[in-house]
Image (cartoon, rainbow, N blue to C red; front, top):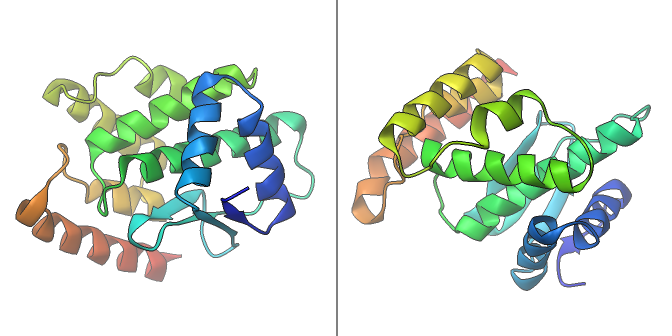
Length: 183
């Protein structure tokens, strides 16, 4: 294994992805090929990827987690692995559509229905500006004024590239700092 995972729950989730359906296996392979570090920390809620240091941060799995909870948590690892696959240093609603769609597909491959995530994102075209606006509304509805919602509210709809990414990167950094202070 080339992915750098030292937490037993995260290692088990990675192994589940390696042995699940085609999309889950692709995403596990991305983590292996890129030698991505996966850290489990109670300092965040959900998951967070920092591509510039090739690291995924996941909240801990609850001690009383059911099988469904574990599979949903494994699908969160798949969502973050999709961000690693994208390689962008900053995020956009366009990329969140791709990541949430991957999470929903992996949920299906693991035999769970991710409900709202699946229904809100799985049928959206990430390259459609209309669908990007629908996804932005879904993100804000789902996460509201939580730390994740603060970060999602700062995202541009379309993925900025090159020098055009500088201002959105500063907005996201400010949102991450605000989200951290709110927590």
